[in-house]
Length: 228
Image (cartoon, rainbow, N blue to C red; front, top):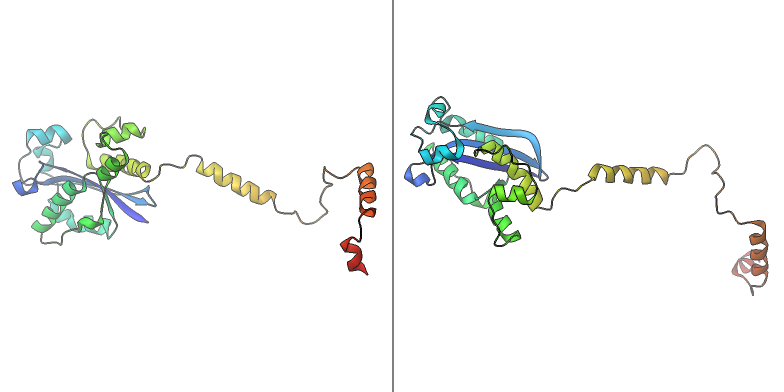
């Protein structure tokens, strides 16, 4: 099962107010586990950078001026995500920005129904508890010490780990368990090429004699009827 963990950084909070995407980060998941496949682009928003947004992600207008505009990365982005479900922390926010950008370049909008909102998952699992990414990393003991500023690819990687925990968590000792299953299967195979070694629970001569006396006391044992 392929899924894409997705995060964006923007110039503000509302695309309808003229704010734009400045970074997209995506991480591929196969069966909820991150692979090495990623998509990461900085984007020239073709506008200024408000100070409030700069304090969040540290991306300046000067740095972004030399990056591609959204129309130049749109096809590559859509190709990478394909038709996979999109795992997003606060999906309404990121999907709103992405669809606004797609509309500007006359490409079809992404369906909200394909998004998996990890904020909603966390609030359902932990009612009343903080559901931001830092709080969830702390709850699941995920190392986010490198997150001094928000970054789309870094946050997508952290969210991939959080999503794994929200969907059931890591199975500790999976390789050891597999090894034990293999060892058990191997030990149950009868070796070929020779007789088995004597069993350690072979009866003693005294036990065999007492067993014979017991058999002689049986009234019409079934194995004698079958032999007649």
